[in-house]
Image: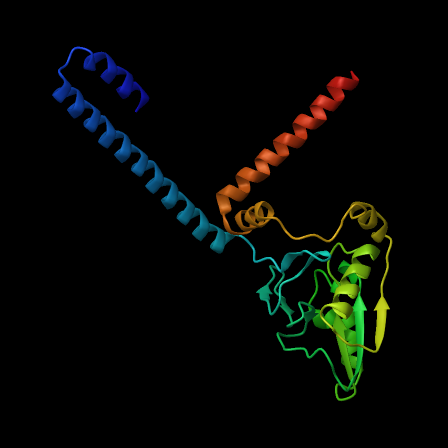
Length: 239
């Protein structure tokens, strides 16, 4: 379009006004059709990339939380590559199946919270220690809830429990907090974390990464390139 406009300017100096208007109108239509073609191609690319993401990207159970960094999706079900199913209940806790959990109960309710060991990463819920513990208790007297999530730390335990008690108004009778050696590095990781609303930019980034196949790969390559550049600059500065 720019080249066409520049050439048209040279020709317009030698043409009468009526022909100049025709030339300008012709250039306008050419540029408009060119931009329309670009927009249509972008829409087609995004649509195909989105469909590829639905087929090839794994369904993630994790979701961002404005109160305690990250959590699990509510009433979610997916099948892992190892062949076992992952379910969450109405509170976003890992469970044996999708089910509605009441905030209050007459039965003795026990709540577990921890990181990936409590969550039961890599195994079916029934084989996790929380699932085994729940199976040992009579269901007519006891109820067990598992609030564990991968990469949690003591700070996130506190923030999540504060949310469940003060905002969600969940009631339970016993609480077991499982702390392990990996909580040290996770606690350092979330040292500066403060509960805050998730920005529109971050929501958009999460949506792209979880739903678009090629755009996700491009972002990964750019992120890797940025890290490599930082490492090279660091060692070049030291040298």
